[in-house]
Length: 165
Image (cartoon, rainbow, N blue to C red):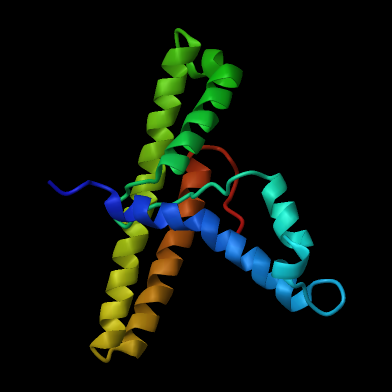
């Protein structure tokens, strides 16, 4: 049986080592004295600074809305903080109830955004691949106007003031 978000987790597994390689390259290319010899001098200043932060978290969202373990952890932390601060205003009976509601909302919002973005990307790439570059540009402009008007209308409906952007 195929793992559901295997590609997302596979990519997430490469993030920390990728950032370590980039730090080593930065030390080598721009280190003190015109470059850093890691073999002779050990880890350079950029690599040492990166190590102070611990492992780099892989915040990955897939094209079908699936998320990495680190992204799910972030959603949990966001929901925890939001619930502790706003559970009464939300009308929740308890902090755990508010946390569950917030985590579901955050997960759904990010997942929907990822799915829509992937669909837009496919549509635009397909338009360009089929020779409709000008048509694709017009469609993008039309979609941008639609999105702008939608946000503007949302602001008016929910009394947040007009959309600025």
